[in-house]
Image 1: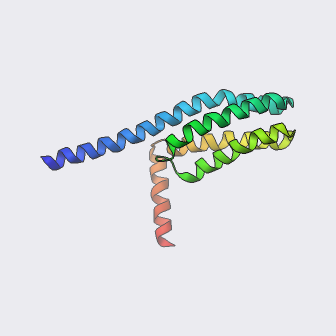
Image 2: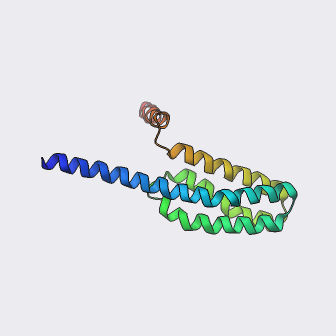
Image 3: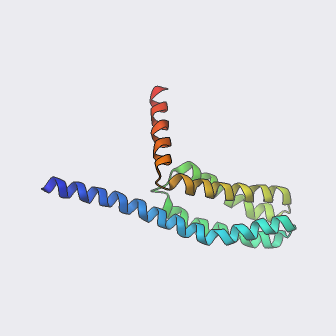
Amino acid sequence: MKRLLIAILIVCTILGSASWSLWQFSALRSKAAPLLRRMEQAADEGNLPAGTAASEEFLELWLSYEGKLLPFVRQDPLEAIGSCAVRLPALAEHGDEAEFAAVTQELHYRMDELWESEIPSLNNLLLHQRARKSSRMS
């Protein structure tokens, strides 16, 4: 009976931590979506001062959530999003409209990609399993 209780406790802990990380990332996405739209709109209109303000807000938001996501999410996507977030304010300040627009689109893509890869779905589980098998064969 003790083993069953310990197993249930372990499963609940795993599910709880996974749910917490998804909840944190969901909160980040909901707060970041208007900022991303503002940056994309600023890039389209060539209004880089508005893009600078939105990108600085996004960077602050990202830095506040990044530490909460590090224990639960793969490092590579987080580093890619952080890299984009750090570059955006400088690009907007220096007037590089094309690069600002490109990095904004990349940031939007990487946020969506990370969300899709972290959602527990059958497709994600099968892809993860295939990746492990191919790495063993190499």
